[in-house]
Length: 127
Image (cartoon, rainbow, N blue to C red; front, top):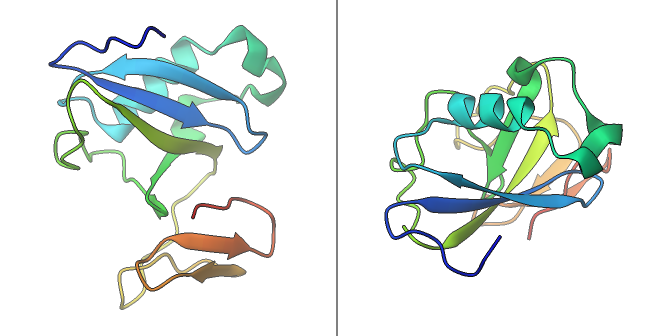
């Protein structure tokens, strides 16, 4: 994408587990579910090997946390006119948060700010 992002839009750079990236423009009113559907419907040609069977299993991860489908970009207070990086993964269900609000997944370690720092499964790494 060009370096110029419209002032009323949010540019998302989505990163797959494979490391492939693609940028998409979204409105602050778009939810995580809207984004998953848009990406699924406009699946990049160079992501062909990672194609999934349904938009319902696409999950966004922002700052080490899975986003639930109804969360909007505006609710995350993402900056307009800028690029924000998120991970995009295929996962059937979201983990339940534990008492600290962190993801309760096995094999994942967290730093003090709640970001994923390592995964025994190699699933993701956000620092």
